[in-house]
Image (cartoon, rainbow, N blue to C red):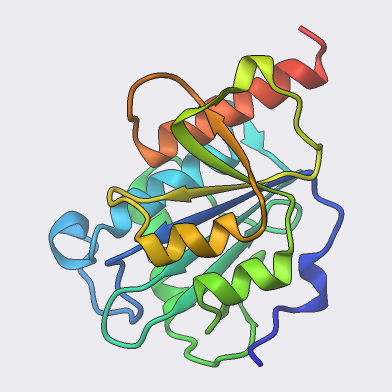
Length: 207
């Protein structure tokens, strides 16, 4: 079994899983043309920015898993740990370079790439089984996030620019996730993360 480091269960209260259906699993894309050469890793890069970056700092209480299913050797899971990560900047190019570095490591077992960034051969269903939940599935027809209580250790599961396949959604539904809506319209994956972070910030501040 491909196992995450014991460090993954760190008591972090905000965790996000983002599934990249076509995102390349080798460092073979161009930083000069992310949308056209990477299987839309640019979508995942924006999720990293949305998850961690504040105006003048990094969220230390966030953990992000990017599960990549694209060519040439799927799957790969890249884990960002907010309490450790360094050198995150707002520009997509520098974050994409960090992902390139992480993809140079092809071990099936989790290994450190750069500070706070770990790479493994975990697939989506294996990741769910190790995280165990409680999971939150974001869907337009779910319960309004503004009116629904959630556990503080909830894990928010998001797809990239493509919908979950039936198999992926069925795997997640087997864990009886909370099904939550961020609004009546479909929005980008990174926008989902921004809204969730804002909602949780407001709850913590009791606004």
